[in-house]
Each structure stands twice: as structure tokens, then as C-alpha cells.
Image (cartoon, rainbow, N blue to C red):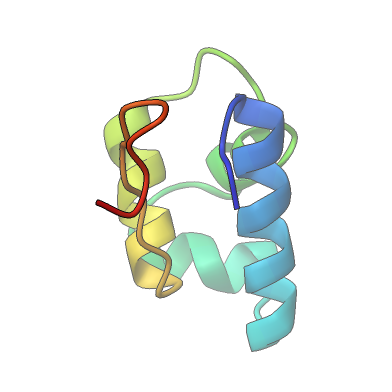
Length: 74
């Protein structure tokens, strides 16, 4: 999946959280952040703390990577 906006990242995180059967409250407790943060992240808020977003993604078993355009898969 290509993540090109906070909205897309939020959608991916929401989908994975639901796939695993966690509520936003459970996810927040598991990641050590607030429910408001999880909600803002899932809704694509542009000003969220990216470090916390990476923690949430990691706890959900999601990896993010950066590729140079035109060089994917090399």
C-alpha cells in the first residue's frame, strides 16, 4: 500500500486495528497513548506526532518504508 497522506495512513491503521478486534481505547492503552490520539491518527489529522504514529503502526504489526520513486523493489 502506498502511503501518500496522513488520511491513507489513518485508514490503514484503522483497518488493521479493526482486523485485530481492538477498540480505540484498547489500542490506546496497548500503545501507551490516549484514545484521542488514536482517533486523530485514524482520521488523518495532519499535525499528529509522527513518532507516536510509528509506535501505533508497529504495535499493530505494520511496517512503513520509504522508496525512491522509480526504484521500488530494487
